[in-house]
Length: 93
Image 1 (cartoon, rainbow, N blue to C red):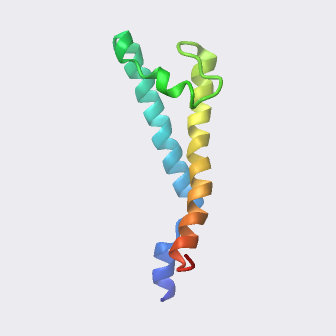
Image 2: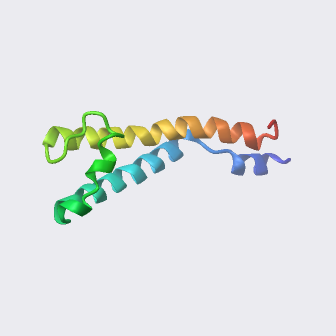
């Protein structure tokens, strides 16, 4: 396998961490925004509450904690995913 092929297949933690973090952050913001305009039976904050310790619906501190934790979950996924991807793509597994 040439160096050019290896370089294109190699994932980097930084770009993936930022991408996943922004994906989760945007999803969180969309869910919170939807929860503010939707009727009570359609609100989605109940889905976020178990995943985000300290998250409280309609409190400023809960909102900020949710932002921080959603962003950090993206990095957590990247830090786990990239080494696993590299290991499996190396042909070891």
